Amino acid sequence: IFAFFAILCMYTATFVTPDPRMPQVFSSKDNYERFLPTLAKRYEQKFNPFRLKVRVHIGINATDPIDRGTTPDYNDCFFNCAGQKPNYVDIFASAGGSGEDKSDQQKRLQRVISTFCDFLEEAAEPDESGERGKEEGDFSDLRMASEADLGGQPPLKCVLRDFRAWTEKMNAASNATNKKGGRKEYPSGHFCCEQDSDFVQFLEAPMPPENKMYQAGSRNMEHFQDEVFFDRIDGALVLRAVVIEIALKATWEIPYEDGIKLDRIWERFVGDFAARAAKKENLPDLPDAMFATDMFAFHWFYVQEAMNAEVFDGIKLSLFLAFLVLLFATGNVILAAISVSCIIAIVSSVLAFAVCMGWKTSVSEAVIYVMVIGLSVDYVIHLGDAYLECPDEKREDRVQFMVTKMGVSVISGAISSAGAALFMMFCRSLFLVKFGMVICYVISVSVVTSLVFFSALLLVLGPSGETGSLTACWRNIRRRLPCFKKRAEQEEQVSEPQKPVQPRLYSSVVRYRKSLARASMAHLDARALALQLGHEAQPTEIELTRLGQEDEPPLTNPPDLPDEKGRMDAETSGKKAEIESMKETGGADLAEQAVPAVQPQEAGEGQPESDTEIVDLRDMR
Image (cartoon, rainbow, N blue to C red; front, side, top):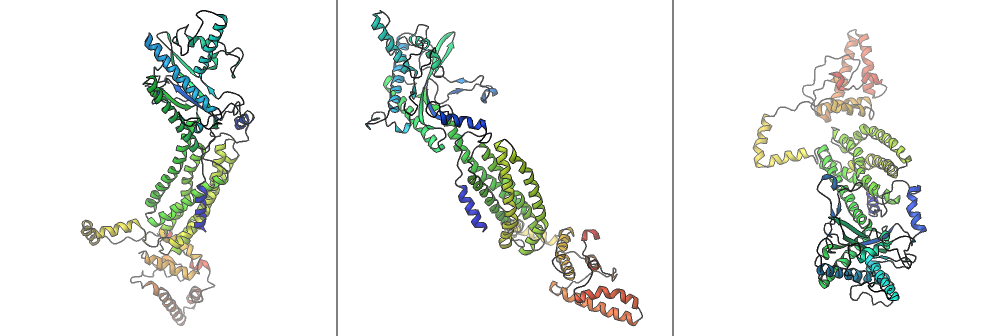
């Protein structure tokens, strides 16, 4: 049954998957958690907060995009990013230089960006002919959204494409009015970044009504404020970088394997284009200044991959450390292996419980799964320690002693822990609710596994005597190794006789055996156990009768243990003969006092418990 339970839990645990959603703070029924899903459902096309949007950066170092500064405060940029800035590459030649070289490089870069936007715009349109991508590769893997997928909105946001449309519109207006000197060229030779430059005039111009993202009263500057990056060097305005944004069909709730694959496809697509364009337009710095990323989702895919791998790696490491702790705590390989097998079954059952509850691995679940192992070790290691504490060598006696001594403590601890965790299930925080449920479940499974399955495994496979003991193994190794053999023989010759075992080790054994057999058998077990452990016990230390023979000399040559009952019978016969002689000599009163203490030993029943009380040897110091 235990093997079937463990295998079933392990199989179910293989269905644990990462949660594609962001970590939830509250329950799914809470208004805070319902806001974004409701927004995505009602405005799925035009405004879906979960939609993936790739952002291609041009002008920022692809290898080291962020200059994090040199002070320690700059290394952690989550709430305060002061001191951090993009690590720019002067690909636009606007941070110095002049003349024809600067103008020529800006023209070539404008052609590159416009060509790239044309490729993306073509990829966003439905491919009815099936001939798309022969020159630059198939665009289907990019999963770009079309205008139909976005409710008529354009999937591409490219500032250089709109700049080209603006120059064409200005040229058309100049031709209509026959205005001299009003024509613009594209690519522009007077691109950026003086006040009268073409690109600055475009940004200050109002948005054209034909733009599908048109907003009345807004300028191109407001529309592209997140896609154009300027800086000032010595008071002069400098164009640093531009960003091209592409909306995809996929959302960031897709499996992380697909998300990582999509990120690598875009990275390869942009890298190949940059390499070809750099060679064609003589822009050697372009491959290092052009890369694709997104606002958040691609990073979250890699976090999910790392979290999913590290959860199971953490569980494996924790189980290995638990085995080492159990091995050094018990000093027995067999007991440590059996204990770890039970812990593995408990951890697998927790993962299976999470799968049945519909939970997926997020930050809170990852923390809970690793903490489960500590809760699973508790009861098993206590029972294993009690198993080794028993002086008997038989498995049956050890298991009975283990359950009798530690069973009540284990159940009491389980009730108190579960009672404390029960109140966590009524919290508002989703992490505390799940943590409370997992603690209650782990405690329930741990109690059943430790008291039932663990005990059954010890009853069948548990170590007996010195089997599996590290101490015995080391002793045998020392005897066989030449470097230790002579030393071990010398130690055995000069070794002191073994000290008697303290009564505390076996007094509890005597007490629990009293409830398993009648009083006379308990006396025999107690005396035999004392002799076996090397304790020179006197009869008066083991049993108290009303014979009053406290001056009985100690046993000098105790017989073998199998003849212990015969010796007791001989003593009983001797006591009867003594009583008969007392009657003949006139000691009838004394004989009447002694008879009640002897008769129960002969009959085996009817003797008051107080007459043959088994006492704790610690009280007889």
